Length: 298
Image (cartoon, rainbow, N blue to C red; front, side):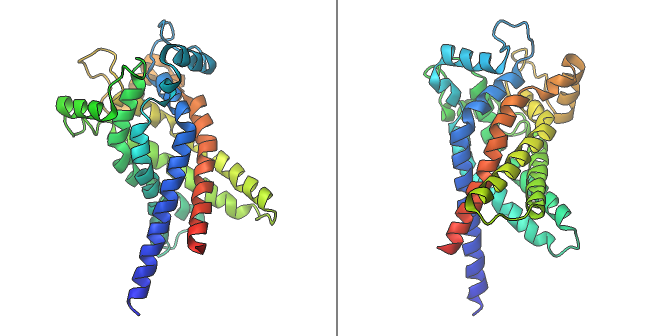
């Protein structure tokens, strides 16, 4: 008899992990080209540079012409390797934090937001080394065939800078801010609004209801957390002067970008980010919910 709750807990956890991993894998395969474009916009500093992108369309054209189709999939292996555990951690820890917060007298709205914040901070710790490798590969403008392999680039970082906060874990504070703020808004908005808008009996309309709320959740969370994303890209990407580290800490990087380039520079890459994480956020939530529901039923 005593084994039953333990078995139930393990089954529930494994279902959440599988559903979360599936959601992440589907989202990254669909949306990675927009992530490459977003990173390129965030690391470019001077609009007069001949290599700078003038618009979203221009960036797609230049990447395709100079780097080929595979240029849009640079740095995809780190997120694929990280995405299953990352999204598994994201959804699993959200569910667990939500359950733990059930013992505290908090409003449902606050519970969803705090559980989201906790899941984001946990996710950031897991994913940051993969992000360092991904950003470095995405910043490389050589053709896909000429750039270093994922493992080769990771070994290069470890050999030169080590595993610490100047090496494979640099930009950790910015990643914590990016994921913590995003998940807090993303989960908080989605579950609170979903509970307000009535369920529709028609399966198609119900799917559209969830997709619409998920789309808004991903969009709003992207707008709020992008200054952390820009800081993260600057810290983890190539520095303006080789061998000289200009961007070190999260808030100091934000202040430097603001002072030198203006407030709008903290929102660089917002359009491709929204184009990716608006629909991508909706896709993740729907894949998670439908996969988790199917696993529970079967």
